[in-house]
Image (cartoon, rainbow, N blue to C red; front, side, top):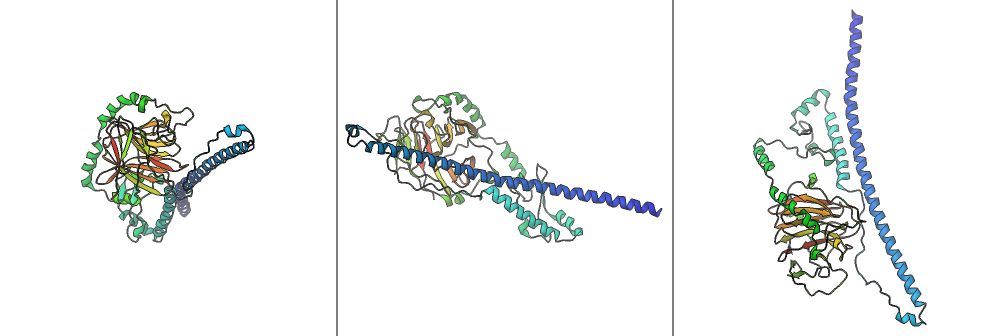
Length: 432
């Protein structure tokens, strides 16, 4: 009899050990998986940095080759100084350009890497504080915490009794979990329901699809907007904004990065008239008597800002006369100025959000992404050169993001603008 009890006791202990071991093994597997994802995020940042370095080295190599060719041609002409051919041989030297060298900031300080590292440290501290308590008090401590259930089944726990307040942290985007850990407010549910059913300008997007075929045919002066065959087609961005910019921001926070801009008259198409100290660009059917120069757009009625950015964060705002045939975006200084693919977003050197009739679209490399049109009167742009991200805001009482581009910088980018409708204008706002 006693022997049977001893056997049952051993079997029960073995079963309990297996159950406890399985639970801890499950936690180990989850931690290993999270560690693997965090390390992959670091590896991706390394690859991005290496790609930037390779692109820059390729550009430097091309510049060295071009300079070597010019040097050889000049030397060849100088060897013919005694011949009549020397006096008749033309050679066009490139114009002298003064600019600050582009020094890209390549590091591993991206948001994903920082958040992964911060999350690991915070989780470690959380466990350290929890494990300081005896076994019999740990479950009550967790049960006393505030619980917020998400659609994914995740439950966020508050620190509870005896835990430090600093342990109450929102899960980072790496986990794919909800950001809010506040108590659910029952009174707010009806308002959220109303907001979810509100779909502004849905009918306008339907009507805008009728103009899709016409838009593909339309470029200033009737030129067609064909994508270059050699250019890779890339994703113009996503209308599902990242969680860190998915909510309205205080305008005062963005103004910390405010930049003063003016239009560059050397780049303005002849249909675009600049006024108010080069802060207003308007379109007219009559051509402005600009001097011809290589920087000027010859086909599309576009203009760039005089200042480009390659490091840091920068924010600017523009006021638009209407939401019809207007584009706001960014472009490399090496964007084509003469061909039909010089249109913003129709090449791999520019990005823009464009209002075409009642339709709002994001464009890059001739790829279009249709967006919900907030019909803004003032548009803000936040450029984060270190993250390689540009976010567009509908500016009112607050700044409401409606699209974000993410791209790898290979050179400085300039604020860029497209205006087509006669009488339309864009104003570069004074930030106050």
